Image (cartoon, rainbow, N blue to C red; front, side, top):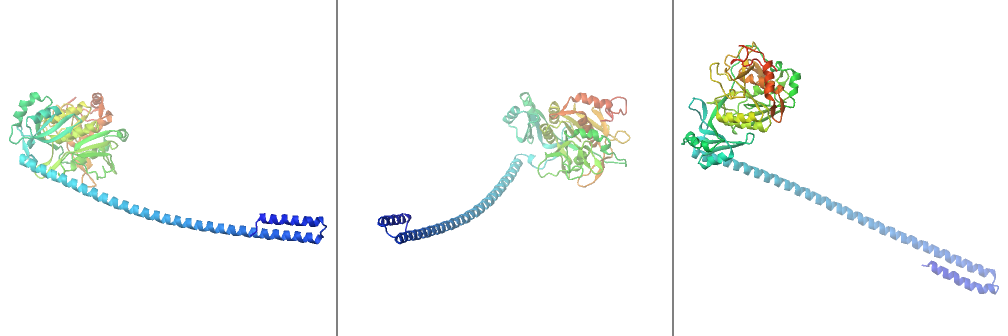
Length: 493
């Protein structure tokens, strides 16, 4: 293959050869032949160069095509390998998740078994020590009041508790009450004179309050007559709307939150009874519906308020519906921690030093407690917590503003409210029923106080001034002024 340099040499040589001939007057034919030869040689060289360039370009294109094919194959192989790796990783993740889930389930099952074993062990241990662990029996104290048999209830601080334990007292149950900064304990009384032993230590236990674990019951009775009182007629909607950002408490039975009157309400509920115990719902559901219920054809007193409901009652075939001072104290402490300023307690029972101390602690923190006056008759002794100082005691009146015949009376009665044939939700159904008793009058007063009070941080601000306003607006019934039957009269919000 001729290159441009070889072509140039040929032309130069031709020029050299031709020059002498020109000088010697070579004829023109010879010159033309030489030029033709040179031109032909140049054309041939150009053709050869073009062919060479074309061949080189084809070779380069082929090489590039082969390289591209190889790169594409390599990329495809890499993609396949990456896909396989991703599938393997996904399978590994699924296996790991399954193993983790199985491990978590096994761990939970093991923890549950340990808890059950511990409960069984505790029950066996307590059974061997005292009758406290067995089914609780209702007994009577020296005054004939119902108590939980076999135990004593103590309320004290941590320092005094340590002293108590150092003296050999057997603690059955301990509850730390951060709301009132105390410790609530139950101690076994079997085989010991607890009262005498506590009396000997009382001078060293300055914070101690002690009493039996008294029994309390709901305050309701049988409805009679056909007149129906609807809660919504007591408070106008514009007034009730003011409670949208406020809290109100209820210590009662468990609630039927599936009932239409409560299903869409703002309710925070907590149970204070032992797991597995039978919890009645009728009483608490009725009271709750009077307070905050709302559904088609029914509206409670303050349906926009948020209800904090403590379940404290259990039901037994022989004992009926009951709660204890211990559970009431724990429920009150919870209300303090939840910053609930007004609490309704539609229940009654005997005086109890521990319960009184807990209520006093709650009142010191700004809580207002409203309680039913009880349905044990007009000549019966006052019931508690209604008769404690500072607790707002409520009696019931009928549509004619006459006092309910079984309602409690006494100097502690402060207000009257509708409590005969009050329309309320019936637990376990989708319907309503008529309820009678001071239990169903108390929520009217609790709602009126909620409307009246300026609540802040769980306190009813300046309650005494607000209370005076409620007194002045009440409809005086019975003897002029305050009396033991109607208190200051029918409350009017």
